[in-house]
Structure formats: structure tokens, C-alpha cells
Image (cartoon, rainbow, N blue to C red):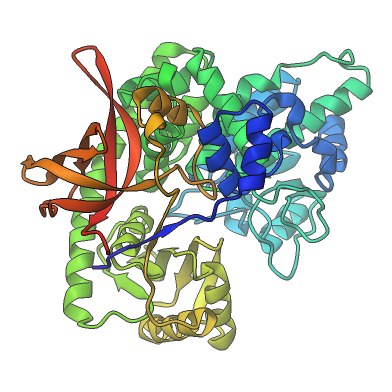
Length: 570
């Protein structure tokens, strides 16, 4: 087990002053400035501040291609990915294209049969689609690596438009158009769009193209801002960096949810998750709605999740959301068993943990290995890969990493040094997937560990909890807690954690696993809770905490959620 170190995020007093002068709350000014916000313009969250679609390479060309296809009555087929970003991207594409007169359907690859992306096998399924062979395929949240798949589609007489946000390989597919902020030569200022953000941008460009052609008036056509709830869900669930542009997209989506204007499926997901849309937050998207959509892709077929987000029938949406809820319960139970087995395997096989952790069991569920990798990464704070055996006898692995190690780059190095052992791989800095020859597992784990050491220059890693220093006493109240909860926090823009020294006035165990405390600082007393921590604290403690609100018997008070605490250093 690892013990986190506490650090204080460097302040930027000049930027904080500039933000405060623009009328932003002093605490928010301090927190935002420490996260790289230097100009009031970066806090503008209205649609007018959105980076214009025209800056996305090939987006206007792709819009023309789609406009031609719609006007020629061609059959379009969206090829989606089986995670929440892929499902929301598919729903945005379907809803927007249909509202602009397109004949469009979707196909989502099955994780267990064809695997990820537009492969030749998926092209074969597209040709045999129940709606008839499509004239054009549109990928969402995949496709940038589908060199063979695009070639197979062309051979089969289908055009391909790629929309993706993943990092490209050395060779780009020969598609009709590629819209991806991460492709070489794209000058789009935000490289952090999720897959759903990319297709949303293409739909904005398509509407602009149809306006130019006189199909719509200069400000006419469908209201695409009504899809902001889907864009927000996919963006948060995919854990992309929440830069200013993504914060704008997520804020707009949350505002729609809070005012009750959302897709029927979103409303149904809030209901089955027992969350209140009027108080919708990034936490709801990332930890309540996202996992329920993802459960379909993990255990069965993501079509269920996509249909939930596409239907306008409230009762059908609720029925589908209930099925997703049941799947999510099953996923939790499978994950718990696998996680316990994985922890036991690591403890017995590795008296000393290396620079990385790899686990494999032939009976594990390949849809859940990524979640197991994520839990082990948190436990050991090492880049972690978990593998299961596929029906074809290959190993399917999913990995999660830590800030010090770019996971896709490590896999790239292993692949180049050991040609043929990794059959395919892809991903990002913090998460990746791969397919491995089963007989190469032992060689792979040695090579992976060496590559992690070489690329990071380290054999062990310490988690760091970065805090925002002391919380000013005047802001330690439920009103400020509510203000903080209203903001968009997430990947690359972490929610504030404060650090102060408190006297521990009372402490007791709740349900034998949570520590409930009464803490005192100056003349203020706070209720506090440290989840999943059973050891008592000393009389005085250095505490890293989040400021939260607690409502009890109609009374709202400030509550501290403890992230870490220890005896103060003198």
C-alpha cells in the first residue's frame, strides 16, 4: 500500500487579482488562477466563447461531404465505440444528422467479437447491416488507427469519414475526411476534445454548410445546443482534460440538466441512479450516469446504451435505463470478485512490487479488466495492466497509468522492441488497451516493466495529493461549499482540496469502516468524515479535505470530506 504525500499547489497572485477585478469570487479567483486560468476570458462559459468549428482541420471539407451525401439521399452508418464517449458521440451524430434530413443508422462493434474500432470484420458487419449496405461510414470516437478497416470499406464500395480524438499512428487511413484535433497539422487550440466533442463540432460545421447552401436561413436549422447534455456526459466520462473549451461544453450541458431540459434517456438515468438533475454535477456524470452507460459495453452490447440516449419515448427510456442499472449491479459484483482475486495474486506473486503491475486470469471477464486495472493502480500507484483471455485464445488487456508514465508510449516501445508479441494496441497517456499473444505474457511483463523504468527513470512512484493550502476561515461555510459544487472540476482541473491543522475533538467509527469526526480550527467546529479509513487520528492533525455541504433535518451545514490526514510536522 502507498502513503500519499501532501503538497501545496503554487499560487498565481497576479492572475488571481486580475480575475477578482473582473468580478469573480475571490476564492474562485485564487483556485482558478492556481489551475492556469490567467485571463477572465478563460472563465467565459457562454456559447459565444466556444472555439469556432472552422479551426478544426478538415471539418469544413467533412461537412461538405456529409451535406452532399444528405442531398443525394445516401445511406449513412455511424460506427461507434463501446464506451460512454462512443455512445454519447453516436447519439449526438444520430440526433443531429436525422434533424438535418439524413438517412442514418448506427453500428457499434461488440467488445468480445470484433474488438475496438473500424476493423475489416466491422466493415463486413456494415455491409450486411439490416438497413441495407450503407454508402458512407462515419466513425465516432474511433477510426484514426483503422488503416485496414478504411481500405476494406473502400474495396466494398463505401466512403468513410473519420471523427476521432485518439492519438494517430505513423500512417493515417485513406478516408474521405479525417476530423481529429490530434492529427498532424491540425491547429485547433484544444487538443482535449472528447470523441463526442469532435462529432458535435462536425455537426455545427454541417449546419453552417447547409445554411450556406440555402437549406436553412442564416440562423436557422436544428438547435444543436439541445445536445449539450450528451456532450457533457461523454466529455466527463472519458476523463479528457477539462480545458477552457471543455469546461464551457460541460457547463452548458449541466445547465440544461439543472433546468430539466435533457434527453429522455438522461432523465431516466438520473432516476435509476437516484440522483437529482436539478443539482447535476460532474460527479453525477462521471460516477453515476457514465458507469451505467458503460455497463452495456462491458457486459453485453452498447446498442442498449445508445438506444437509451436516442429514444424520445420517456417510458422506453426508463425501461432501457432499468436494464442498464441491472447490468451495472452485475458489473459491480463481477468487479469485486476480480479485484479481490487480483490483489491476492499480486500479494502472493510479488513480495516486492516492481515499477509496474500486471495481472492475468483466464476466467476473468474481459469487459471489466480495465476497472480492475484502475483499482490496482490506485492501490499500488504503479502503471497497471489487467488481462483476460478472449474466445480466440489471445489475451485482451486494459491498462491505467499514473502522471509519471505515458502508457501508450510505453506500449509502443515494448511493441518495437518485441515485434509480434503485441497484436494491436492503442490509447492515451493514462489509459490504453492491447491484444497480446498468450504465450508471450511472461516476456511481455518483463519488457513492460523495463520500459516503464526506462521511460520514467524511476522504479517506484509516490502519489501526491496537491492541495490549495489553507481555506480562509470566512469561506468555511455551506454557501461557499455550494458555490464550489456548482463549478466544473475534473481531469486536468481538479476539485479543490484544502489543507489545515485541526484539533480532533471527537472521533468514532461508522459502520466499522468510516471515521466520523468533530474538528476544531480557531473558533469554528466542523463535522468531518474519512471514508474507508478505520484508524483513529491523534489529538492534532494535518488534514487534506474537500469542503462539502450536509443537509440534516432541513439544516444545511459545512462538512469536511477527508482525503488524507496525519500528525502535523513541526
